[in-house]
Image 1 (spheres, rainbow, N blue to C red):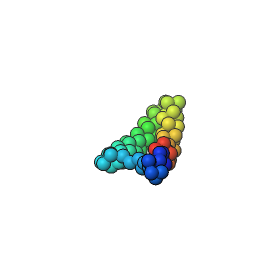
Image 2 (tube, rainbow, N blue to C red):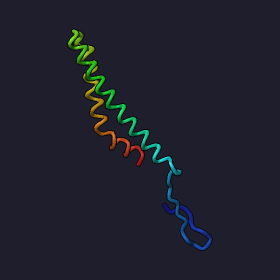
Image 3 (cartoon, rainbow, N blue to C red):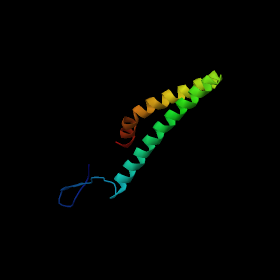
Length: 86
C-alpha cells in the first residue's frame, strides 16, 4: 500500500502484519471455537431427539432445527472467518 512519498520522491510502503505470536494465538482460539461449536451442534441434536422421544415434539423440533442451522454455519466457518478477517 503506497501512502506517502519521501523527500527524494521514493514511495514509502507499509505492510501491515500482526505482532509476533498473535497469529498463532488467534489460530488456536479459532480452532477451539470450531471444536466447541461442533460439540454444541451435536448436543443440540441429541437434546432435540430426546425431547421428541419424550413427547415434546415442538421443543424437540426447535432444537433439531437449531442444530441444522448450526451445522450449516459451522460447515462454512472457514469461509466466514476468512471473509471477516481478509
